[in-house]
Picture 1: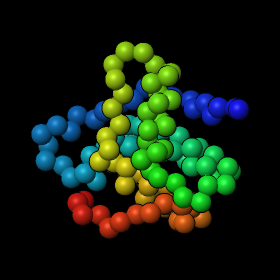
Picture 2: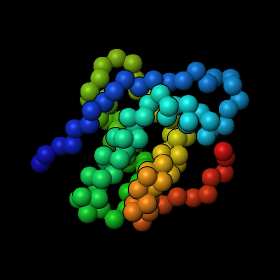
Picture 3: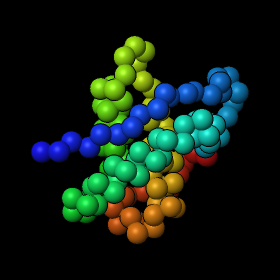
Picture 4: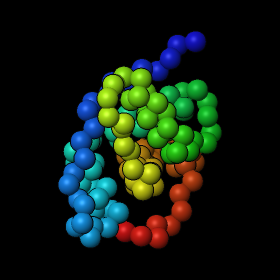
Length: 111
């Protein structure tokens, strides 16, 4: 069985500690520094579609990305904030409306 290999870039974290930023603002800062994460989530989602999956969970995609990164790097643990899952799912759907049936989203409670 062929395994999907993802090109992994170094993860960069913005300095947002103590700034009182919303989750959305923290996500935007993180995404600006790490646009490749969304690209890799797109690759993973497209692979799921190609394999015939009818439902995809952003949590599963996050864990696959974490696993792939862990295989590709050594040293400090890789931190991908779970607070950003819903934001990444929404970005995927903005860019790929044809994937709307794949993901279940709920109303955001916190911006």
